[in-house]
Image: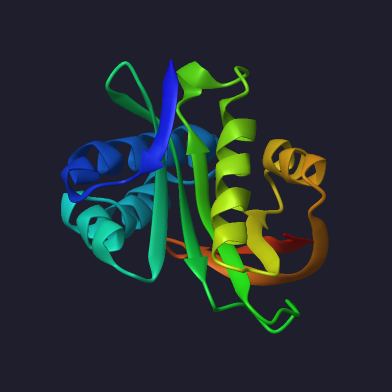
Length: 170
């Protein structure tokens, strides 16, 4: 059975491992090892995840199965690029599922948890950036009625990449 809950500081080590593993599983084939290593070193680690969990700027939702973290989402509120028109915007900054749990409906349940969290925070518009070369993720977000409104640059290591900005109402 999988449970969803807010991350705790004690999750920092396991979350760092999950975050890096899922990022590498998703993007390693299309990026250089050097750029992947640079990004992972600057974005994941026990200290980094601990700070993000503790920060009031973030909401980190984890999915736990048999005592192991198997998916997570990281949300931020009240900041958005200019192409996002909102009174109280919310961003899905990260949403990843362990590859062993793909195809089991976990991503859908996690997305619903994200939307519920934004609703509780009176968010009017949810936005996210998704790499233009990630058709699986784009298709997933479109199932939840996200629509393209713009783009921004996501720098992976030394590689500037185009992210599509998608939005939906809460």
